Image (tube, rainbow, N blue to C red; front, side, top):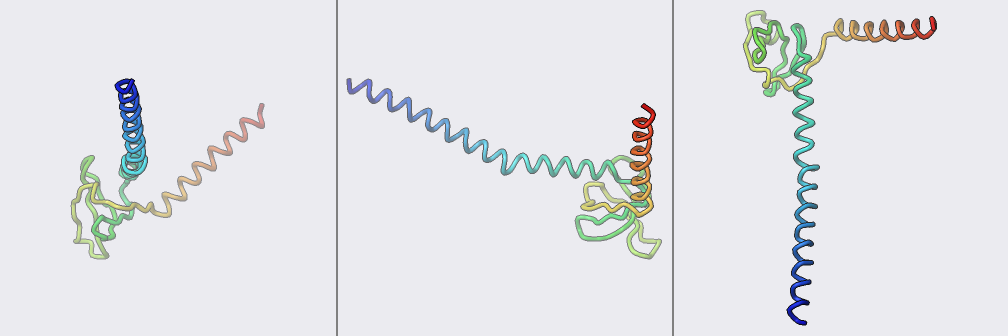
Length: 125
């Protein structure tokens, strides 16, 4: 009798430990891994939308303007008003991107044009 009681409690304890491990793994995933994946995806979107003429801020805190993109990983950035201060740098060193006003206005016009086209199609039907 005593042997059976010990065996049942040992099995219950093993399941409890397993549940704790699953619980802490889920917390670890939702607090550490998932936000990091979202941040990496946001950085990837930022880098894919980078274009010549965009104002940027580097991870070091320098502000500049992208003047050339010779390959997929490198950009040439012009810093300050001095036209001679052009530095090639890796895209991963860019922390923030700000599109010029003309690009933002052009994107808004495209969205408005698409909306007008959809509206005109609805009215024709």
